[in-house]
Image 1 (cartoon, one colour):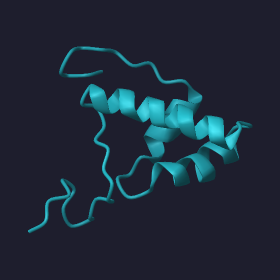
Image 2 (cartoon, helix red, strand yellow; image 1 turned 90 degrees about the horizontal axis):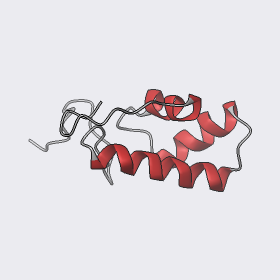
Image 3 (cartoon, one colour; image 1 turned 180 degrees about the vertical axis):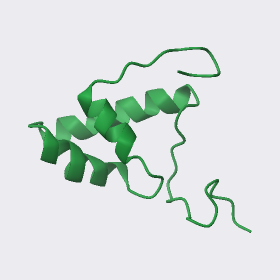
Length: 81
């Protein structure tokens, strides 16, 4: 659920797989390739686009943060000392 606007997200099995694999270090493309496509019989290109749409929706509601660079283990917020 989004704390910002109380939007409730119900995750299907593929979305749940992405959510569980989102560790702040693994690129979305790798999550789709290694987890989603390995577990579900989904076209890789369609799966990636659907994953991007899903992640962007979560990010718009403040549920997930999208970054160009992986988070560091020393600083979960990704801040540079």
